[in-house]
Image (cartoon, rainbow, N blue to C red):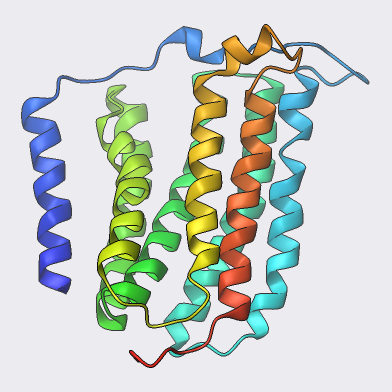
Length: 242
């Protein structure tokens, strides 16, 4: 399973770079529906709605007291919490002054969270050895995706890092038996993250109905997805499949 998972990731990366043309960041990306300055803070709601990530990171510390089967799992979950706190700071910084340079500090901690969560789900569904051995390589790929983007302007590797877990995790949940219980929290995470992406994509359209647009609510939904993941870690216990 570990070999299959590694091969699938490498084949996907190779396919994208062979057959998909380079994808570059549009300047329009930084033009959010709500750009009001409130209380002296530019883009106020896009900045302020990053605070839930910090709240989830603090709340998630409770789950660090849970029993982890292996030490690396506890470390990986601590990386998720640290990444969530850094998302709060980095995304808030970016939305205060949206440019490609500040966007780095938004995206970098997000890739860390994506990859650490993915490794922990792989450990649950594809085996503890698979999750453990892929944890650091996945983190490295996540960081590399930001470096590649800033050096070349090409977003293809970052797109893989962002969307591979979104596609793979529901498939893993559906096809493979769990090592741990309370999988409904992971399904909740998937549903809220999907909602977050839809709110992000619909920022402008939602702005015709709500003055805030969709992007601030994307932050709230994404933080809710992380909260679901923290609850899964806190409440889970080994299943009969263990």
